[in-house]
Length: 326
Image 1 (cartoon, one colour):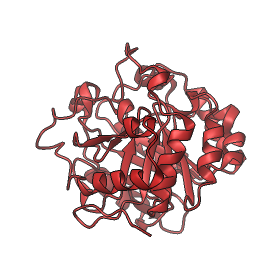
Image 2: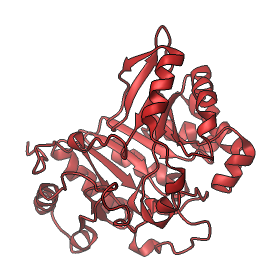
Image 3: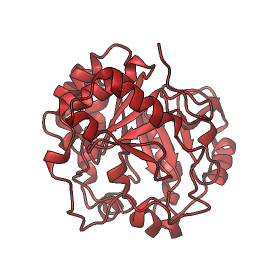
């Protein structure tokens, strides 16, 4: 089997697959509140095209697949696509990132389709703050979390973007909420991704001090949890409560990066913090074979950058996070 290895010896085993750039929320660090310039569906990859890309990736060792957006659950018939991707040999870890507003109705169906676990974006447990950050209703998300747990999706991970002056005072409350409900908390630093991300730069919080405080307060020790992403985890001693830290700014993890991102339009992004990309849709629309597509992917991965430059060049990336795919 041909393995996907980049120019720095990193094996690529993880694909973050965006199935839409649309979303029913407007999180301040992801897309502008008045953003309406979405791609038309004709430009999106079809389910068959998406399946071909994932199949070729899987033939070269990919086994972590995460469905993202935008909000993936707004994509019509998304569970049909998930079933098709789940059946591809080699894909043994299929997960979903969601804002959970539709999870209350879809959790059971997603589980049946092949989703094993979910990551839910939730930055606050206060309804008024949630509305200010996302323009949405917190109760829908909480109902979605309950449904995910009842459906047997496990682990359920809560993604909290920690922001100064917005929600940093809720860290302890979120730790305790996740511990009470057997959720895994993952805290994330804001990144200068597009104008929306840069607009949140004044609220940036380094997670290094927060991590130190939690270690002392909750007697936390290093831990490992299921997943293919970059989070570092700690667990309360004599408890199942686990907290992860994703620190692209204060302590980047580029040397172990094992992933690439595919947008709904067929753009393969090789690094979240660089502009290196390959347009796959023209090859697919021209009827490329699996063998030729494999060669395209091999050449693309070989050009994957060594690291992002968020700190050195914060204005470099102009695309919104929702366009990149989670």
